[in-house]
Length: 103
Image (cartoon, rainbow, N blue to C red; front, side, top):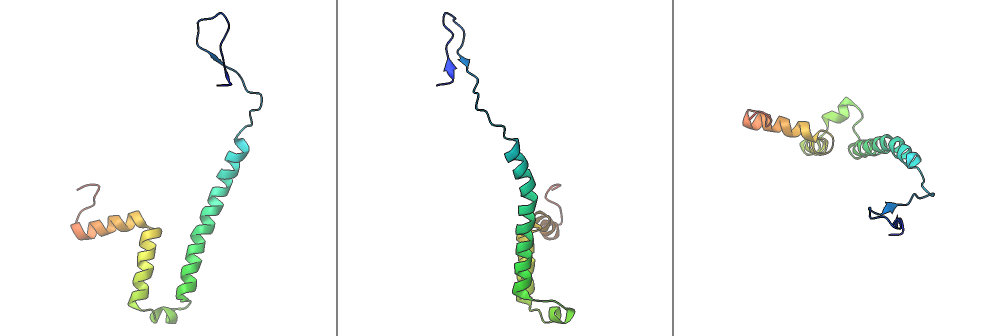
């Protein structure tokens, strides 16, 4: 209530005093807007690199040795983290015969 000061002799509402120590938020806003895509890219490709390191398939011959369990883990990981909406829509379309937005 420090900023509220009543005018003496008036019956109007109290006036808000102006603060002289106002610091603009532009530098913080610009820093956050600049940092967001960099952090997003780093985290996204960090997950991708971890998957590549875990499965270590570099050539077509290596991919031919992949087990069904490993392929299923990759598909589930991509469905949950990268393409969750499209995977859900595609699954609904296949299982029910119609898209959830229209049926």
